Length: 237
Ligand code: CA
Image (tube, rainbow, N blue to C red; front, side, top):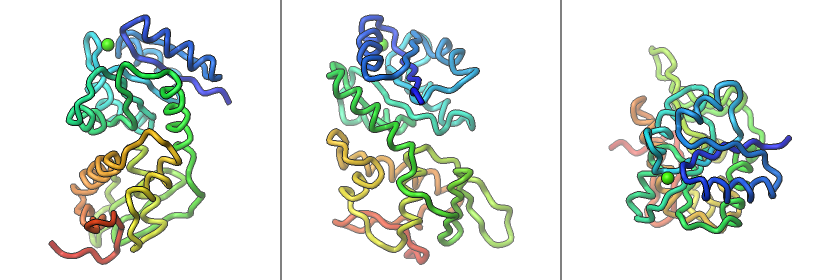
């Protein structure tokens, strides 16, 4: 299957550079200069991955990423954010908006293609697992649904982005064990040279934020100096 990549970038020379390199790597590429045009192009069929420029005329890439994540149909769509901003705070903001990865301009086309491939690889489950449960959390790998099931209340669905879902699935399949950032990078992201350990913290933060409204964030514990784990007996705080 040929993956279709949608590039949302208002600078024609950069859009062309990306398009040429991705086409050369065997992808089918569509281009949109603005988010409303991108939305039109996604109406009939979703792309395999979205490359999204931060600074766009009209709606910004960050705002667009947030809207896609809030939408049931597009919340699992992999998003690679593209930007001229390189400050650490901007990077965190970019990831917080819902992007799965981040490339700073000027970028090497080779690196961009490598990241696109890595992000697509991540969409394939690490290993097939059956339904998982820890405490009130229930995860169904077939429907990709995560529920919080507390006694005497209706099960509440927990919306998660693709990376957060994978982290939670990995945790729930390997409970009570402490996973170092390096180990998580290896298991969740694969052997990618470009991802920093700091990225793990950002996604854990997003995972906890998604679990907090149903009082499940405390099941993800930080083990100081070691990493993270999921436990069915969280320390009461
Ligand atoms: Ca731009």
